[in-house]
Amino acid sequence: MSSEVVELLRQLIRIDTTNPPGNETAAAELLRDYLEAAGVECELYARVPERANLVARIRGRGGGPSLAFLSHTDVVLADPAEWERDPFDGALVADEVWGRGALDMKGEVAASAVAIASLAREGWRGSGDLIFVAAADEEVGDGFGLQWLVEEHPDAVRADFSLNEGAGDRVELGGRAFYLCATAEKMSAPFRLRVHGRSGHASMPGIADNALVKAAPLVERLGAFSAEPQLIPEVEAFLRAVLGSAPAADGALTAARDVSPLAAELIEPLLAMTVAPTMARASDKRNVIPAVCEITVDVRLLPGQTPEQAEAELRAWLGGGDYELENYERQGGTRSPIGGPLWEAVQSFVEAEEPGAAAAPTCVAGFTDSHWLRQAFGTIAYGFFPARAMDSEVAARLIHSANERVPVADLELGLRFLRHAAQDVCA
Ligand SMILES: [Zn+2]
Image (cartoon, rainbow, N blue to C red; front, side, top):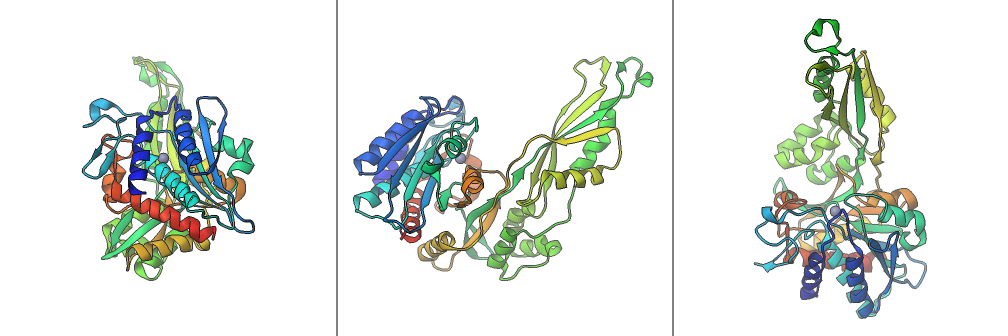
């Protein structure tokens, strides 16, 4: 099975699914051919022919919960000039598979496919369905992937539980090993701040009212934003796992830092909404004083918080002035409960693989395809693909970057976990 997952990953990397344009159909067909040879039922779903999603399934005997292995086949751009090796060659060097998508996330695609194929070959069948979804278009999200599947083919992708990317990395905190499992995600809720003034010729600043200058103190104020910390259930459970107890919200960061600086780093963005001004636009001409200055503000909310609450908080923080503030997008912000059969499968796997280690929940600062399933079906969706051969900080730097690669040992670890989870959850 080890050489099988390595070979399948190398083949997937050699299919260039850079999104845009994606061209995920070639990857979906490769997976279909591989799975059908193992006797797994497959179906391709495509909004346009060149961007197919694959859904494969081992039907359950009935009565038990269903589990979906969720993944995406598209990858982000790779500039070969920045790489030490061809990003679309899938080279196997010193027990690592190199190539775009090795970590994000063709490695997990391959492990999921081999997990379901090997179970099918063994004649395994659960009480509920075991489903494998290799979706298109996760990296851009133009409506060809899981969002489209959930809307147009809900019966194909409905599941009680799901496993996806998002976490699984091993961290050492206070001398003990923890494997992080993403059970929730923050909401991305960007705002636009529009500051008003009066235009005029730049040679006579006195007769105008410069919107850019008026925006400056507001930008500075946004940069200094800090909200009252609060303990969301994910951070509380994380602290209980790491510290043995959960401190009060305002002491959480210090308590985490006392165990390890990394523990503090992990929880800091999860104690409150974060605010970061990232883009500015004012005059298009050097000699024209701008009447309007527009600032784009990246805002990430805790799961459960709404953009309306954030707007009220930001207005109170900024005070009065000649500006408009509006939220123009919202995405993610969903959570699944910590506990139950899938959580137990994660925990029992970690304890068996590494005695003394434990699973600890986390909330991801970005969002993954998991939120489509949580929103549509109430699926209990976790981001967990365990990794320990590669240091988690090294892996984080390689994702979406040059020289992306994955250790064979981590592919094998992930494969063992997925097989364990299927047999445990769909028993
Ligand atoms: Zn990804």
